[in-house]
Image 1 (cartoon, rainbow, N blue to C red):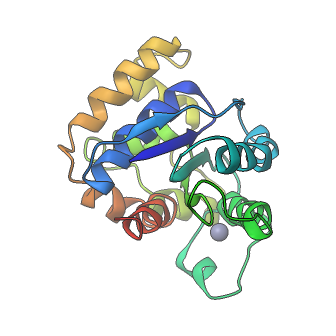
Image 2: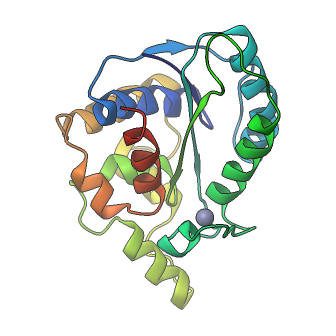
Length: 210
Ligand SMILES: [Zn+2]
Protein backbone atom coordinates (compact mmCIF):
# COMPACT_ATOMS: atom_id res chain seq x y z
CA UNK A 1 0.00 0.00 0.00
CA UNK A 2 1.42 3.38 -0.98
CA UNK A 3 0.92 6.20 1.48
CA UNK A 4 2.26 9.69 2.05
CA UNK A 5 3.02 11.21 5.44
CA UNK A 6 2.94 14.79 6.62
CA UNK A 7 4.13 15.78 10.08
CA UNK A 8 5.84 18.68 11.76
CA UNK A 9 9.29 17.13 11.24
CA UNK A 10 10.97 14.30 9.31
CA UNK A 11 11.20 12.33 12.58
CA UNK A 12 7.44 12.56 13.08
CA UNK A 13 6.91 11.23 9.56
CA UNK A 14 9.15 8.19 10.23
CA UNK A 15 7.07 7.49 13.36
CA UNK A 16 3.81 7.86 11.44
CA UNK A 17 5.04 5.32 8.89
CA UNK A 18 5.69 2.75 11.65
CA UNK A 19 2.33 3.48 13.28
CA UNK A 20 0.49 3.18 9.96
CA UNK A 21 1.98 -0.27 9.28
CA UNK A 22 0.98 -1.40 12.78
CA UNK A 23 -2.60 -0.15 12.45
CA UNK A 24 -3.08 -1.38 8.88
CA UNK A 25 -1.23 -4.66 9.60
CA UNK A 26 0.50 -4.49 6.24
CA UNK A 27 3.59 -3.15 4.59
CA UNK A 28 3.42 0.49 3.59
CA UNK A 29 5.60 2.06 0.89
CA UNK A 30 6.21 5.71 1.37
CA UNK A 31 5.36 8.28 -1.30
CA UNK A 32 7.19 11.53 -0.70
CA UNK A 33 5.10 14.70 -1.05
CA UNK A 34 6.64 17.51 -3.10
CA UNK A 35 6.58 19.87 -0.11
CA UNK A 36 7.64 19.57 3.53
CA UNK A 37 6.27 21.30 6.57
CA UNK A 38 7.97 22.82 9.57
CA UNK A 39 5.64 22.91 12.54
CA UNK A 40 2.15 24.31 12.97
CA UNK A 41 0.56 26.24 11.17
CA UNK A 42 2.84 25.34 8.25
CA UNK A 43 1.33 21.84 8.06
CA UNK A 44 -2.13 23.35 7.55
CA UNK A 45 -0.76 25.70 4.87
CA UNK A 46 0.95 23.03 2.76
CA UNK A 47 -1.85 20.47 3.12
CA UNK A 48 -4.03 21.61 0.16
CA UNK A 49 -1.19 21.69 -2.41
CA UNK A 50 0.10 18.35 -1.12
CA UNK A 51 -3.34 16.73 -1.46
CA UNK A 52 -3.60 18.15 -4.98
CA UNK A 53 -0.14 16.87 -5.91
CA UNK A 54 -0.72 13.39 -4.49
CA UNK A 55 -4.10 13.10 -6.18
CA UNK A 56 -2.97 14.00 -9.68
CA UNK A 57 0.74 13.12 -9.80
CA UNK A 58 1.19 10.03 -7.62
CA UNK A 59 -0.48 6.70 -6.95
CA UNK A 60 -0.62 7.29 -3.19
CA UNK A 61 -3.75 5.67 -1.76
CA UNK A 62 -3.87 7.85 1.33
CA UNK A 63 -2.24 10.71 3.21
CA UNK A 64 -1.52 10.51 6.93
CA UNK A 65 -1.14 13.82 8.75
CA UNK A 66 -0.40 14.43 12.42
CA UNK A 67 0.47 17.56 14.35
CA UNK A 68 1.21 18.42 17.97
CA UNK A 69 -1.66 19.94 19.95
CA UNK A 70 0.73 22.09 22.05
CA UNK A 71 -1.63 24.19 24.20
CA UNK A 72 -4.56 24.11 21.78
CA UNK A 73 -7.93 22.40 22.24
CA UNK A 74 -7.76 18.60 22.58
CA UNK A 75 -9.87 16.62 20.12
CA UNK A 76 -12.48 14.70 22.14
CA UNK A 77 -15.46 12.46 21.46
CA UNK A 78 -17.76 15.53 21.43
CA UNK A 79 -15.98 16.73 18.28
CA UNK A 80 -17.00 13.52 16.50
CA UNK A 81 -20.70 14.46 16.46
CA UNK A 82 -22.00 14.72 12.87
CA UNK A 83 -21.50 18.21 11.48
CA UNK A 84 -19.59 19.39 14.55
CA UNK A 85 -16.33 21.25 14.10
CA UNK A 86 -14.30 22.90 16.85
CA UNK A 87 -12.55 25.92 15.30
CA UNK A 88 -9.68 25.81 17.82
CA UNK A 89 -9.02 22.08 17.52
CA UNK A 90 -6.19 21.40 15.09
CA UNK A 91 -7.54 17.98 14.19
CA UNK A 92 -10.96 19.44 13.34
CA UNK A 93 -9.20 22.20 11.37
CA UNK A 94 -7.14 19.71 9.37
CA UNK A 95 -10.25 17.65 8.63
CA UNK A 96 -12.00 20.77 7.31
CA UNK A 97 -9.00 21.62 5.10
CA UNK A 98 -8.92 18.03 3.81
CA UNK A 99 -12.63 18.13 3.07
CA UNK A 100 -12.36 21.42 1.16
CA UNK A 101 -9.26 20.32 -0.75
CA UNK A 102 -10.79 17.04 -1.97
CA UNK A 103 -14.38 18.20 -2.51
CA UNK A 104 -14.30 19.17 -6.18
CA UNK A 105 -11.42 17.06 -7.45
CA UNK A 106 -12.24 14.91 -10.48
CA UNK A 107 -11.24 11.25 -10.20
CA UNK A 108 -7.58 10.63 -11.07
CA UNK A 109 -5.35 7.58 -11.38
CA UNK A 110 -8.21 5.21 -10.84
CA UNK A 111 -9.42 6.60 -7.52
CA UNK A 112 -11.96 9.21 -6.55
CA UNK A 113 -9.82 10.75 -3.83
CA UNK A 114 -6.79 10.30 -1.60
CA UNK A 115 -7.85 8.71 1.69
CA UNK A 116 -7.56 10.76 4.86
CA UNK A 117 -5.80 9.81 8.10
CA UNK A 118 -5.42 12.60 10.66
CA UNK A 119 -4.01 12.48 14.19
CA UNK A 120 -3.34 14.97 16.97
CA UNK A 121 -0.49 14.31 19.41
CA UNK A 122 -1.45 15.64 22.85
CA UNK A 123 0.49 17.71 23.61
CA UNK A 124 3.29 16.40 21.34
CA UNK A 125 4.54 13.24 19.62
CA UNK A 126 6.84 12.54 22.59
CA UNK A 127 3.75 11.80 24.71
CA UNK A 128 2.85 8.97 22.31
CA UNK A 129 6.42 7.64 22.56
CA UNK A 130 6.15 7.49 26.37
CA UNK A 131 2.90 5.50 26.27
CA UNK A 132 3.22 2.32 28.32
CA UNK A 133 6.49 3.48 29.87
CA UNK A 134 5.41 6.57 31.80
CA UNK A 135 2.08 6.13 33.58
CA UNK A 136 1.68 9.87 34.20
CA UNK A 137 1.44 10.66 30.48
CA UNK A 138 -1.88 10.53 28.62
CA UNK A 139 -4.72 12.65 27.28
CA UNK A 140 -6.74 12.37 30.53
CA UNK A 141 -3.85 13.82 32.56
CA UNK A 142 -3.32 16.58 30.01
CA UNK A 143 -7.04 17.49 29.91
CA UNK A 144 -7.21 17.57 33.73
CA UNK A 145 -4.19 19.88 33.74
CA UNK A 146 -5.75 22.18 31.15
CA UNK A 147 -8.91 22.42 33.25
CA UNK A 148 -7.11 23.54 36.39
CA UNK A 149 -4.54 25.65 34.53
CA UNK A 150 -1.60 23.49 35.67
CA UNK A 151 -0.22 21.24 32.95
CA UNK A 152 1.09 17.92 34.34
CA UNK A 153 4.27 18.22 32.24
CA UNK A 154 5.80 20.50 29.68
CA UNK A 155 6.83 19.62 26.14
CA UNK A 156 10.47 20.13 27.13
CA UNK A 157 10.04 17.62 29.99
CA UNK A 158 8.55 15.07 27.62
CA UNK A 159 11.49 15.54 25.24
CA UNK A 160 13.97 15.03 28.07
CA UNK A 161 12.17 11.85 29.16
CA UNK A 162 12.30 10.42 25.63
CA UNK A 163 15.65 11.69 24.31
CA UNK A 164 17.62 12.47 27.47
CA UNK A 165 17.86 16.06 26.23
CA UNK A 166 15.36 18.78 25.33
CA UNK A 167 17.35 19.56 22.16
CA UNK A 168 17.87 16.25 20.34
CA UNK A 169 19.41 15.92 16.88
CA UNK A 170 17.15 14.64 14.12
CA UNK A 171 18.89 11.24 14.16
CA UNK A 172 18.47 10.90 17.92
CA UNK A 173 14.79 11.80 17.56
CA UNK A 174 14.29 9.10 14.94
CA UNK A 175 16.27 6.46 16.87
CA UNK A 176 14.36 7.08 20.10
CA UNK A 177 10.97 7.20 18.36
CA UNK A 178 11.63 3.84 16.68
CA UNK A 179 12.88 2.31 19.93
CA UNK A 180 9.78 3.41 21.84
CA UNK A 181 7.34 2.34 19.13
CA UNK A 182 9.00 -1.12 18.97
CA UNK A 183 7.90 -1.66 22.58
CA UNK A 184 4.30 -1.96 21.39
CA UNK A 185 5.21 -4.88 19.11
CA UNK A 186 2.56 -3.85 16.64
CA UNK A 187 -0.22 -3.82 19.25
CA UNK A 188 -1.44 -0.24 19.58
CA UNK A 189 -4.40 -0.82 21.90
CA UNK A 190 -2.62 0.89 24.76
CA UNK A 191 -1.98 3.99 22.63
CA UNK A 192 -5.62 4.04 21.56
CA UNK A 193 -6.73 3.74 25.19
CA UNK A 194 -4.42 6.40 26.62
CA UNK A 195 -4.79 8.81 23.67
CA UNK A 196 -8.41 8.19 22.60
CA UNK A 197 -8.99 11.60 21.01
CA UNK A 198 -5.87 12.38 19.00
CA UNK A 199 -4.42 8.92 18.36
CA UNK A 200 -7.81 7.17 18.44
CA UNK A 201 -9.04 9.38 15.61
CA UNK A 202 -6.05 8.45 13.46
CA UNK A 203 -6.48 4.75 14.19
CA UNK A 204 -10.19 4.90 13.37
CA UNK A 205 -9.47 6.67 10.06
CA UNK A 206 -6.97 3.99 9.05
CA UNK A 207 -9.12 1.04 10.11
CA UNK A 208 -11.68 2.06 7.51
CA UNK A 209 -8.95 1.56 4.84
CA UNK A 210 -8.19 -2.08 5.62
ZN1 LIG B 1 -11.56 18.28 17.20
